[in-house]
Amino acid sequence: MSKKTYKERIFQSRPSKTDIVPKDFADCKAGQTIIIPSFTDIYDYIQHIPAGERRSVKDLRQFLAQKYGADVACPIVCGMGVRICAEYGYEQYSQGDSLETIVPFWRIIDEKSPTAKKITFDKAILSHLHQLAG
Image (cartoon, rainbow, N blue to C red; front, side):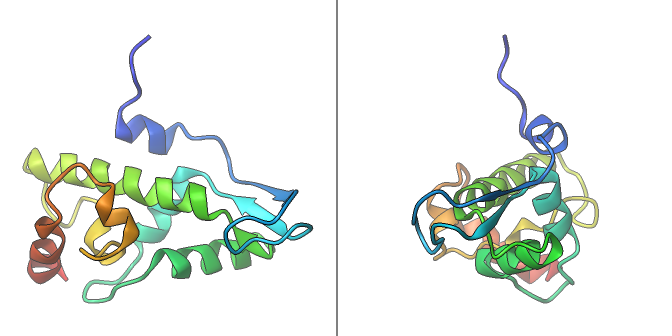
């Protein structure tokens, strides 16, 4: 069985679902309603960040929690989803796709963010793409 591509991980991800936080972790408290988002929801959020603007994973989490009527969004799944979207976007960029057609991952990850430490490509590309495409 072959490993899923980043594109498959995003577009074949399970649907978003809400649950109850069983015990405290990160900034989530036991008993809160939590949204465990699909990677497609994360991709869509990043896709709609306007040129010249930046968002954070915290902004993403607040948006998803509000969208689904939850108290919080899962920080682990959101972080993984942002990284997977960045890896997919970088693959597209590396293959010569235009900046207008790829997910603008440079608008949600900066070189100093925790997610930047986990990406497989050179972090310098983040500021380079932000300068090119905003």
